[in-house]
Length: 549
Image 1: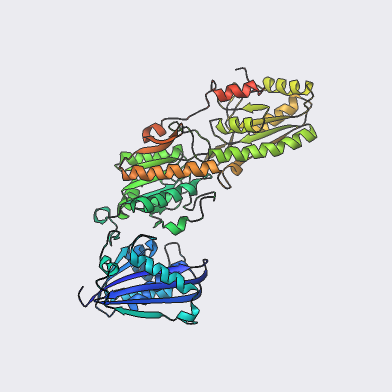
Image 2: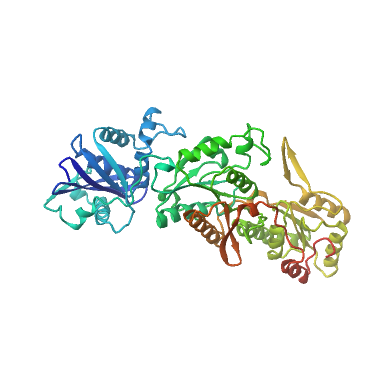
């Protein structure tokens, strides 16, 4: 080591966020090792990580060469992607228009790195690196050490001489986990993949995001860039590096921390979005590809249903490596046995049918429950079976009202003065067509439940009510099944990325997670097989499908 070269390890810790926090740094120069630490009463882990770096660099004379090791990916990436300079130019406001937190420390850090030659090196958190472990121990110990650090967080400062030959110091120059200073893919050593959620939301999206981020970081030392609001974020370069701490606690949350959109098509990116993923009138796919290159992204992971995966497939034809993850409550993608989100939607619908069952029985009514599913009857079939539906109407079997009435009256003759009808939103009467609600240029399946209810009252002397579950089926916490399936899908997507097996969609086949060509995933719609054992089982317990089978 030259007299102008320093090796620094930093770490921060926090008990609660915000809460009492501690920071620490180990500074090595020639044959001296200096340990410093400090304490703040109410702070955050991010501030403590930042504080450790600032305090360490304060002790380095101007003009020095510094190798600063940190296990905070956020801090390292802020430096290596020059976020501080951008924030300064923007008046210390983020790209989302929010004031940068901890400005006092960021400003000082920008000044400190301007007077030294600083190389930031990412080390693995909770690694076997002795100095990283030492910093973690010091930072945690500083949280409750007011007596040692002083009431105002004054530094513990200990200089140990003659330790340059110790194993810990000899290990300091190792840079196995170094993060590069440039973001373009040809300049990077860490591999990087992009991630977005497209189409309608559903339970389990956050579980997939968590699995991709953790799977990439923990197993392959790779990074994940998230694009906000689906393909709109990809076109407008609204993105950020997703760190491990950002996905903590989201496994059981519905929705998506990245946001989503089902109207933004890069190949037809008009004002207000596009309603048809196949239109190509205002093509901004080139901007999207340039943004992927700017971030140094080797592969784009798209979590979505048929529309989003169709867009992913079109990007693959432009030469973009793509991996798809099947997401839809409708379970209508042909290349996988099950999509995540489906089980949660079925569970929500089943719970609703259970509740409606009691009021139907009390008032001797015919209750109609309309569920989602688009042009496939999977939700109606499984929720109807699980909830004890007497009549299940699905798009695959156009129904006749006379068969519905016959079933209701047959139940009445057996002393059952109520009936439960579960109808898929895409179901329709024989010789007719699905019911739609049109608002402007948007056309959505809707209204079949009310139509069936009205017709029953006309044809019988029984009172009928319709309930449309709608977006209840998309919301809420994912079931345990969907959490596990989403995690397995996310991990498999990262494995495909590491194997460079692109233009595939992860899928469930039997009990195994596999992959299928993306082209197969967008080849059509998987619909209920009317000869399947599920349909036969429903028929065997007396369920009617409103038509002869």
